[in-house]
Amino acid sequence: MGAMIVFLAFAFIAVVTGIGVVFSRNPVYCALLLVINFFCLAVFYVLLNAQFLAAVQVTVYAGAIMVLFVFVVMLLSPAREQNPLRQMGRFGLIAMPLAVVFIGQIIFAVLAGTMSPVKGPYSLDQINRLGGSVQAVGRVLFTDYLLPFEVTSLLLIVALIGAVVLGKRRV
Image (tube, rainbow, N blue to C red; front, top):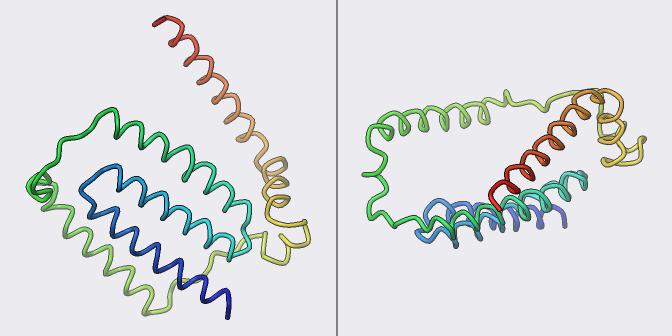
């Protein structure tokens, strides 16, 4: 019962902040509301016994990505448009019907009960036997996905070296 109350409270906060993100005129307020929304998502991960994903959500999205968003917003300082629908132009004619169709499909799938959880080799019992979500993610990364993990780390090192080289040329 307590988990349900926590879920409903944070779901309400997530919906309100999501609406605030969409309708906020100030980009800084929009970014701050998005940070609150990301924290609500982290609480949902904790309620689903995915503590590692919650920590990654807070660290990567609510921390690093939102700092990047705020810096970009502060540096660019976009001009305020009086009517955002006028700015959409011809893309709005395509986007609005597609959004209605997409939302209709989601509502139909929920009402028809066709949305079933994805089954995989790592059920909740299997994850608990491995010692929790962090151990399960580590085991999968370093056994099944070792090559993509190493290629990703190599790509990040190359990007870091490239950023240093480009940065030194400008100084």
